[in-house]
Structures are given as structure tokens and as C-alpha cells.
Image 1: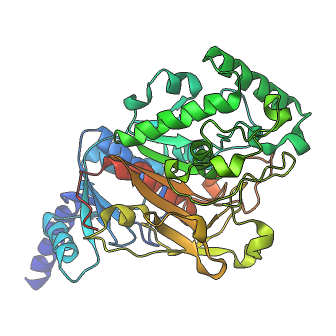
Image 2 (image 1 turned 180 degrees about the vertical axis):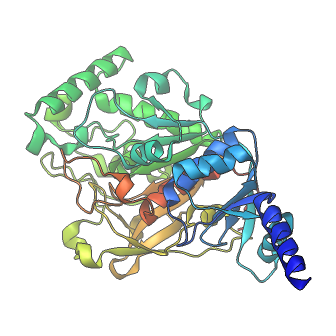
Amino acid sequence: MKTIISIYFLLVTTIFQCFGAHLLVPMDNQQTNHLKAYGVTFWVLGQEVEADWLLNYRGGSFMFKNLPSFEEELVIRGVSYEVISDAQAIQIKDEIAHPESNMDLMRLDAVPKIAVYSPPSKQPWDDAVTLVLTYAEIPYEVIFDDEVMADLLPKYDWLHLHHEDFTGQYGKFYATYGRESWYIEAQNQFEESAKKHGFEKVSELKGAVVKKIRDFCLGGGFLFAMCSATDTYDIALAADNVDICDYMYDGDGIDPHVHEKLNYDNTFAFKDFKIKLDPYQYEYSEIDNQAYERGLREENDFFELFTFSAKWDPVPTMLTQNHQKQIKGFMGQTTAFKKKLIKSDVIILGECESVNEARYIHGTYGKGTWTFFGGHDPEDYRHFVGEEPTDLNLHPNSPGYRLILNNILFPAAKKKKQKT
């Protein structure tokens, strides 16, 4: 009799588990593919179903309704998940809601419309954001100067600035690549675009573009940038109507009073910086903490993510969700930001304290936000021009790439007032 009862309860339990009400997607070290987990969550939102982002619970896990199509999608994409009952879901929520726990539940209820600002010409480098969007199967649209100048940015919720130089100096690649066909083609296209939009110089067009992007943030847009698109964006804002380009870039010389005319009130993140005026130097300003200043090697180059109060500071908490708090460093034309040149109202999300640099920073502008992430490719320490793109099939659990995807997903969160 006891055997029959045991079998009965086993069958009931099995059936109950099979028809669990929720799917939990763990984001701790039990997850087989962290990057595609974001893509599945994005896809669920696209089916007009809400999802819960469980901040600081098992690495920032996701939870949503259990539907056969959802479970099938998780299986197809190779994402680990657990089928849980209503009672288990309530228990998790109670644990998260406890006043002494540094956890919170963020309801995701919308699909952010994503744009990537990227030039039409083929460039001999890849972009980490487009790589991970493609790998995670998150849809996006490519736009460039025509769309920005036509005031189409308000169509989008989230904008990424592809590896870009907003100063009009073509990446300061002149000394090394000025005779390469891709460089000449890009310069010709940029100059034609400037004339098309009524500007004499590419730097003037880029100056207008950065102000359009600024207004996008002012109205509530989410901006994300990596590598040289971070500091050159702020340099272009500070150098509004100031000629910082030498003759090989715009046909005439630099304004001799550049540093007296820079306006740091215009910038998002940085203050009091000096521009590198040598046109042959592969560096824009002193914002970037360069290799000889850092004194780090690949073996000891790491940065730490800050831990924020999930219940009081939900936005920086979302942006730092990860299964690791220590992240491998990686270089780029702009690798890291000197902390002494960062404005006091900027939130530092990740830093390398030993060399006094920030790697990952965030702030608000008007109704919107911006996030700057130093470096080029989180899984390629020195990514040189012309190298093959990183194969993310080899890095499905990349903590560095997770930070990018946090930024893509957090605009889907229901508005929740930040308390600090």
C-alpha cells in the first residue's frame, strides 16, 4: 500500500512540475548561455508577455510565464531554465522583497526599439554591440547621419554609437592608414555627406549629429557607446564651433586657442580635459588612460563592478547584473577613463582602483540616460584593425558582453523612480 501511495505522489509531483506555471532562467554559473538568455527574454517581451528581472537573485535571473512556445525557444537557443510552480515563484518573490535582502524585482513590459549608428562603408573592424545583438538574436536597425539629421531618432528607444570618431578626424588613423583604400573611401563618403547636409567640413556635420543625439537623450532616449565613441562624443560637444582638426582632416589648421574655448558645461561625462592636437598621434585627449600610464598587462588587467542597492538604485543595479563581479579588462582606442576627469554627478559602475580609472560609467541627461563603456571587444584583449570578428559561440557566458546586454534590456523596465 505504501508503495502505491509513494508512486501516486511521485506521479502527481512529476505532472505538477511538468505543468509548472513559470519558467525561471537562472543567470548564475548554472546558466549554459548567458548571452542568448537575454535574447529569449527580449523575444518573450515581443510576444506581448511581461517578464520579471530578478535583480541580484542568482546573477540577475529572468522569470516569465510558462508557455510551450517559450520553453521550446529556450531549448532551441540552448538556454538553461527551470520549470517552477506558482508557490515556488511566490517564495522567490518573497525572498527578494525581504527588507534585508539586496534584491529587487523589475517588471519588463515593453520591447525597446534599437538603433545602431554605423557608417555605410565597410570598416576593417567589428563592433562588440552588433556582434552580441546578432548572436543573442535581438533585432536592431542601422542608421547614420541621414537618419539623424532627418530627426528620425525619436522613433527609437535605444541608440548605440558604433566605433565612431565624432571629432571629424577619421579615427586619427591618418599616420598609419591614410593611404589605405578603406580610409580614403570613408573620408570621401563623409565629405560628401557633410556637403549634402550643408556643411563645409565633416567635423561640422559631426558636431550637429552629437547635438541631435544629445536632444534624443534629453527627450528620454537611452544612449550607449563604447571605445572611441565615448570620449569623442564629449570632445565634440565641448569643442562646439572650435576647429580642433588639422589640415589633413579638414583642409586648414587648428584654432590656436582651442583649450581656452572648450566648454565643459556641454559634456555628458568629462571635464577639464586637454585635447591631443598632434594629428599624427593616435589619441584624442587625455581622458583615455593609455597603456604606458596604466602599466597593466593582459594577465592582471581586471576591473571591479560596484554593488548597488537594488531597492534604492535599480538602474545602476540593472546595468551591473552579472555572474562575476571581477571583469577581464580589454583595450581599445579608448580603453579607460581617468577618474579625475569625470564629472561628480556621473555614476561609476566599474573601475580599476589600482590605476585610478573608470571602465564603465553612467549618467542621466534630461529624461534620458547615457552609458559609456571603455574598450573595444570584451573577449579580445587587443583587437587590431583588420582582425577577424570574435566568435561568440566560443564565449556564451562572457561577463563583459553581459554588461552590453544589460544596457539593451533595461529600457524595457517599467518606470521606477530612483531614490538617490
